[in-house]
Image 1 (cartoon, rainbow, N blue to C red):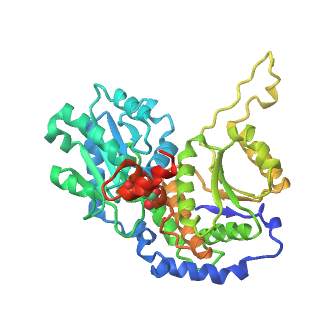
Image 2 (cartoon, rainbow, N blue to C red):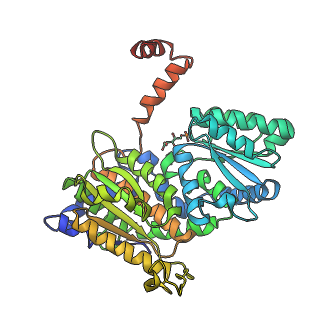
Image 3 (cartoon, helix red, strand yellow):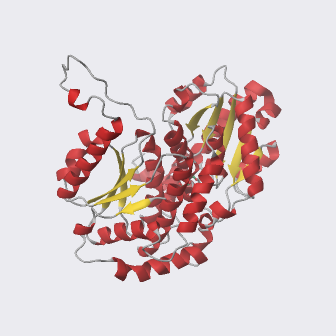
Length: 445
Ligand code: PA5
């Protein structure tokens, strides 16, 4: 089970804070457990790992097997909460080089997460002569970036397999009832999976949104759900001692009150990169409103110690650092012995990578603490589907608590609409004509 080690943040807080904060955490916790806080209609994820729809889960596994048997590639179209979790889990458990590795599961290409023509064309090129399927994911069913990408890949599929053949290779994950994607899917006869009404995009990785691509990559989604379900159980505890999410949410909130403005999520595993991206969306969208909230950033150590390390050690002291640590692999590589010792490294010969990494982690921890950066350490155990399931639920639960501690609604994202409206107006979307005119004037067009 994940352990939250607060030893290296305590000296940054003048007085013990746990007892004083516990009543507020209890209120936040009760809101999550009873769905009666701000945004309570979007807390379906709280009970999801134990109460998910078993029938849909079986359909997800069946669809994944079908894709594995008839496709050498899966194109996953989605953005934000409809993208980052799946990519995070796949890269973390299978490697960022998943597509390059020898394997008997399809390559996975993520598109529709931006508006890059290069990315679009490159992916289409990579699919030439390759049997492929598409999983288009959009809760609203109307988001511009994935909708535009879907047009291209739908056309590609229809040219290759004809309209009926294409329809058999398109899997749509969207709202149960509404949205353009749902109507299109019903019309064309695509197999559909549901993003439940009470689960917002950034909390949806353990629904079909994340599970279908993750299963296609060959990851044991049952183990992922089991890990999450165990953490759900742990997070029902209504006290600081027993509940790791309370400990993490409480510590980062207290550091925020003590003047820290940026939380850096650090990992020593490059494959964790997109889990960090997922975490950034989760916390950034949940807390960053009403002029409040820690800014979530991420670093990959040790690579970033040679770039961002300078700022972390000596820049403005508004940082806190949360470090995700995993146990070493069972068989870690050892540094080879070199009789000539031209590089002077024989003092490390026979040492495992884990030994070297641990000294780097501990050395960095002490240096950063000394430099004025409080560190929260998350000890996660072995890196596998079960622990990642635990970690996902742990971060989600702590995020819900954190939003309530800040007194904001952790489940809405009103700020995301501002750019969307401007973009629609500038693109000439029907209904936005006057706004478009006003914006063009502002831009001097
Ligand atoms: O968390 C969110 O709500 C957003 O990041 C959405 O996930 C993102 O905008 C994509 O939305 P949709 O799934 O409706 O296409």
